[in-house]
Length: 240
Ligand code: C5P
Image (cartoon, rainbow, N blue to C red; front, side, top):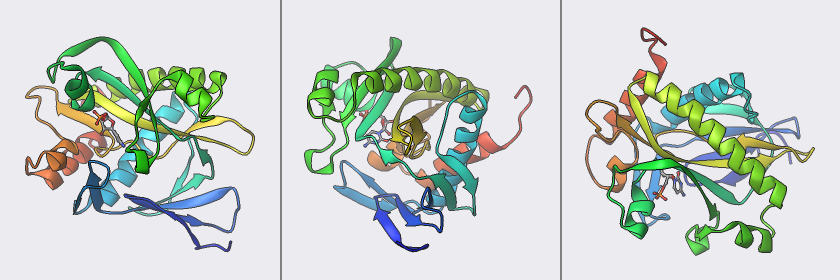
């Protein structure tokens, strides 16, 4: 594999080789999908926003003791990250009922959960990313018991840090999805992205949705919502 080779193309990003075997370049696209690829579209400017927001949040988490794959932002859309093997588990943390939790369990959207819920989903497009238990993850060989504990502990710490950071920008963190990777040394570090594609974010005063639900639910104002989140997180406000 030579530098510049496309290693992987996902729904929202492309990953390229670099001249360092332990480093890859991620390039964010404007393409948007929902419902496991059934709904497709574009959100103009999304790639640049999600790249920069992810890096801002990963840098913040890094300053607060969370190990991430972030190395260096190259441009609005491109970032160098440590090469990892992605753990095929999507780790979802929920603070407020919404989305599939509300639908599956009949809890009204907006109801606050008594404590943050961590869920594991098997990252598998053909199966539609099913919800799994620890035992499923162990039996499928997706992770070890120690790794599942590590994923859960990291997710809870990240939730606490992100809730604080978003609230300082007038945003409620309803729920979000994380992906982790294994380094060549077998360490588990935070990878992928944290953006309005992967978080539910509501305005803290009006509870207006400022995330991908605007695309999923055809609410309109999708681009404006992403720009609003970007503007709020990048503007230095008083008390921040
Ligand atoms: O759809 P659901 O309610 O399970 O999603 C929970 C959270 O995880 C939401 O913030 C959603 O944006 C995120 N998610 C994601 N990628 C998926 C599934 C969920 O980013 N494949």
